[in-house]
Amino acid sequence: MTTPSPPAAPGNDPLHTQLHYQVAVFARRLEQARHGAVGSLDRAAYLLLDELQRHGPASVKTLAEALGVDSSTVTRQAAPLVEADLVGRVPYPADRRAVHLALTPLGGRRLAEVRAGREELMRRLTADWPTDEQRAFCALLARFNDSLESYSAGLRP
Image (tube, rainbow, N blue to C red; front, side, top):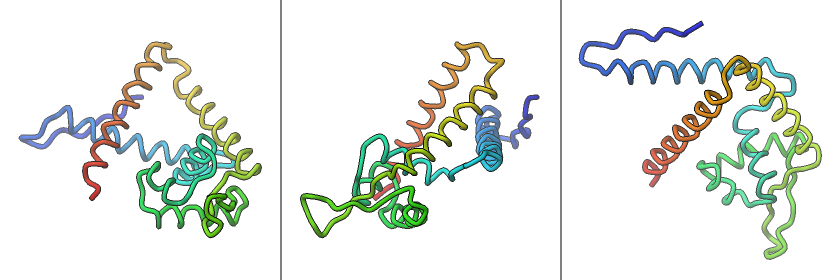
């Protein structure tokens, strides 16, 4: 089933009208699919846990820079993860007053479980796509995300 786009308003570009509409539908449907998943994590928690797994313990400031958000946002997002024992606070050897956030063993297991579920969802959604189309979609989506990141970086002070 193809999701039809609304017609472009007079004077608007039909291609970009369709593109922005399809991106909005994509975001909504991805969130709906995520809510049905067993052991799901919200997007912010998933990305924070993933960053800690990939790069190891980090300060709130380092995480904020890596995730492209404000330090207060990381602090707010990390609090329930610490409470759930998915993330722990560990001393920073170079400065005994500072702490870093680190993925706990439970957090690593939960991340692996959620990642496996999301990968399975991607396999199911694209099962009838030729491999070259799957690769092309992945490459174009990565390029789109890079453009979004560059655009957002230009908006930051």
